[in-house]
Image 1 (tube, helix red, strand yellow):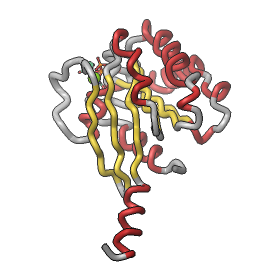
Image 2: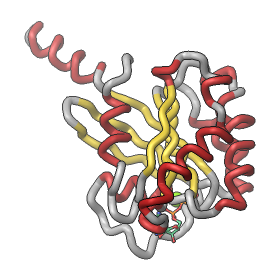
Image 3: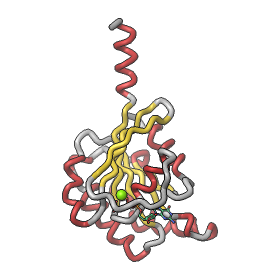
Length: 184
Ligand SMILES: Nc1nc2c(ncn2[C@@H]2O[C@H](COP(=O)(O)OP(=O)(O)OP(=O)(O)O)[C@@H](O)[C@H]2O)c(=O)[nH]1
Ligand SMILES: [Mg+2]
């Protein structure tokens, strides 16, 4: 292998991003990931373990780890933490009664984990196809206030909140765009 090839390969390797897709069961993680791959988003079953898929996006390869969110599976999340660059935390935007549970799990299982210090965090408020357009801003404000990320993650460029729909694909481009414009 020539030197140029080695350098080129190294560069390509450097552009790999490891992203964990986490959040409560039924929040829509698998649906969002399938949408990113332009796969059929109907008839998806709960994820019992995990699935890895690599997405080529612009110059990057995003290795996405879609992990089951059921209560019994959450104890295993930490098995996947090593070398993580980004956590995509998915919240069901229409399941108001579970937003508090989501907040609690985000805190306990992600933000307070020493092994995830410095990792970028993107929150996807999902299922916005079920929310009236006129209520979207209010929804985002409400979730942002509840999460109060500016208090726990002082670096403002380390977290972001987007409104998305895994069904229609709305907002997903913005999530990916944000992810690839971080510093790795
Ligand atoms: N209307 C609507 N439904 C959605 C959306 N995203 C997911 N769903 C539905 O929500 C349910 C759960 O979706 P999944 O993608 O399986 O959720 P998950 O977070 O992967 O769940 P676990 O694998 O159990 O952790 C399914 O019935 C999806 O069709 C969305 O953007 N809009
Ligand atoms: Mg799933």
